[in-house]
Length: 179
Length: 175
Image: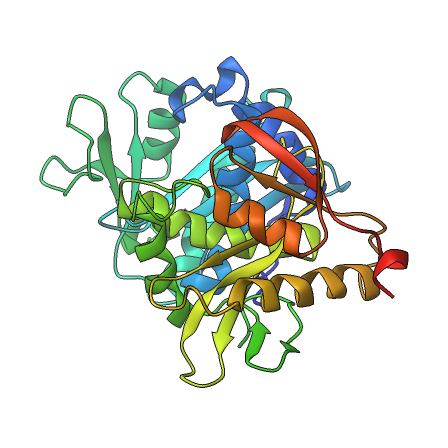
């Protein structure tokens, strides 16, 4: 079995999912909070979705991490995923409501993105619903930009999805970092 | 690299082993065959079928059990799947089986499912097992009965709708 590598940031630890994570994420997917993630979805369907994601490390060599704070509290998921209908690998995130607004998603997504570039990923995108202003702001902050020419996931239209493209140059922050 | 922690089990004609990437196409073909997959729950599209293949791997990670690939010793080909299945919403763990096109009518499901049930009792410590069968799936009903399972009740399965629950003889009855 392949497990997710453990990534650490100043405030967070990213590691493979545990069973209790998935329980919490099933609850999240069933709530109105999941309205931009194709939800709310019934628990039985969320379970199948998440269980299939656990296998992605084995199948694809990349997948999802559970995010926990330094005191070991589970706060959400960040992942590098490419189900068959995605033309490119997506970096995606979902945070439990109580963990929002603290920049955790930015930290976690930055770490996952940097890991992906280190692994030699050639492209990375984030597929975001236009109304999902929080995620769009985060994509902006990560340095990603809308790519109107990017291929869309099968079955999606440009009205439903904005493709944000990440590029390796974003990883080191603003250009001033080189000054 | 094995995709799961599944052990490898053997019967006279079959090997039950971890699902592997090379099994994916046979499984997807089965799931997308709406006649054959009617009693199992299939899909009309490839992405969802692929995701089911991944789901089974995740099920192994989650529970420590799932569907084995049944490999036919004579040809080395995947002949179907059998194992223990218990996704969210299931009443309790069940013994399940599927035989792929071209491998039917040879008693493969019986041989594999009996071995998987034995594994669940002997190695996982299960004390009881069921099989959930959609009404009208007479082949599977016959197989369950051949394994000694008896009809217990009809219930509503979240994925399959009306479903028949068969209960297998416990470990003590099979010694």
